[in-house]
Image 1 (tube, rainbow, N blue to C red):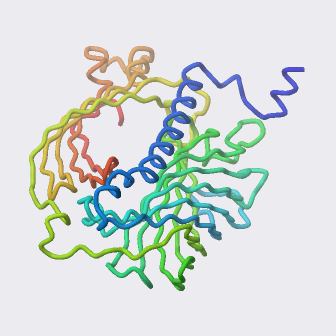
Image 2: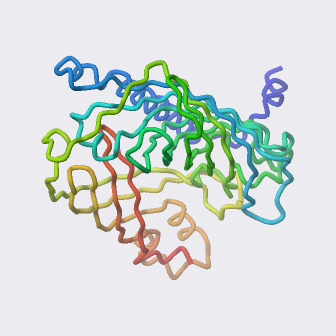
Length: 364
């Protein structure tokens, strides 16, 4: 009875190890924690300040239903058929109008919130459906409140009903696990501004990938057009930041030094597989330094060391790697330099890094 039940649920337990279960649980806990923290700060972060002065305006709070229509962007050939992508999304967001927060003025009163979505990928047999949750932030392209455009960035996780299975879903090389990261980037334009509702159109690009934790992992990308409505439960006028106002901006710059430790897991192989191998650790240590401009933007450069357990295991076991065995751990390592920029937004930040490998002998 148990075997039949598990088979019906299509859970390939023969591939699930204790480490995999730990990775999935850790991912879910981190995501839920992040969303709860975001909501907590958005809903309560301004209350204490609002009691100090009448010059602070109330936050704008809205619920946004949204429909997206698009197509899957193929990552390989041949690619499974898809009739089209349809996504229903609901977002809860806040425009923080507190002019006593330097970052709020610096980024022109951004919007932050959380999106919940359901996606039909146009091929139930291969892709199934997906459910996603993603905290997001939006930046306006101008200082106008009405008839403006803005940019949206979001990152969270998705749960796919179907993923690669050698026996039942071997053509789905895009998604290798139930859980994946979900990355969203979008641009919108208001077409109607009312007293309690705004309507807008936009374009969005959504990427899903599990980051090589489980293979295959070509990733699934969709390009979409969007129609959305912001329905406000509370809406106010945004107060401008007046030139010379000491509350508006901190223009001082500072130097900093930071150390980072990173720990992860991966499957060994290319993005197409082989699938189902054991997962091994990847460990990173990095040091960097740089300048914080205007208390909001960190520009940094540094170097990092990374070690791959899979590389070490491969070197020690196979005969064609004897030349690496004199220093197996060093030859299973990677040294690289990187340059990055981090945008600090209250209690959170968005960081982008780009690097160049100086030493990675095993990879070729």
